[in-house]
Image 1 (tube, rainbow, N blue to C red):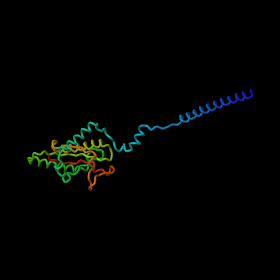
Image 2 (cartoon, rainbow, N blue to C red; image 1 turned 135 degrees about the horizontal axis):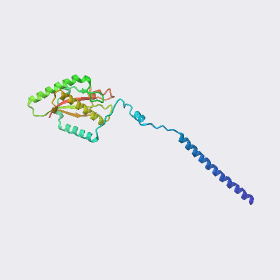
Image 3 (tube, rainbow, N blue to C red; image 1 turned 60 degrees about the horizontal axis):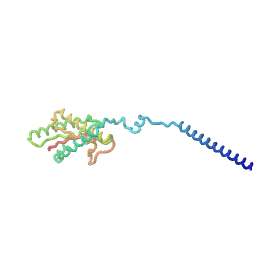
Image 4 (tube, rainbow, N blue to C red; image 1 turned 30 degrees about the vertical axis):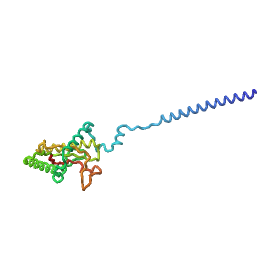
Length: 222
């Protein structure tokens, strides 16, 4: 009986020792894992690196401050009201009379090679106004300058504002050349109405969309 008690006591002590050993090994294992993870240096990209990764063409295309939603909504409302007021059946066939005036990429600067087209447009507009004033017509005459942009870069809101600036730039050139300002109205069309070349809308990359960066002149009697 004494031998059995002694053996039982030894067994209990052994089990307790094993439990302590397992606990010690577990703690050492956790400590080891903590040390391993604490030594790993995970690089975090700074703001400049992230911007260069997502905006690869940031140097080629500089965004300007876009109009607010209220300004954009107001401009769209004006454009829709303009379309509702004007009867496009009364538009003189502008393709036969006025060549488009083209602009540089992401710019409201008229291209340098457009001066002849601009001079021809000014001369024709003045002749039409003279004819209108001498005709005694009671139907109002309006010279509409429509601005357009491509869709190779920039948001629709940005391109709408750009097209409006282009239309305003051409209007200023017309007025400076002697076209009465009260005859001239502008409208921005953004990227929504691409030019038609060979019966197809102009698309493609930035170089291929040069024809979309334009102003068009229309004479309306309404």
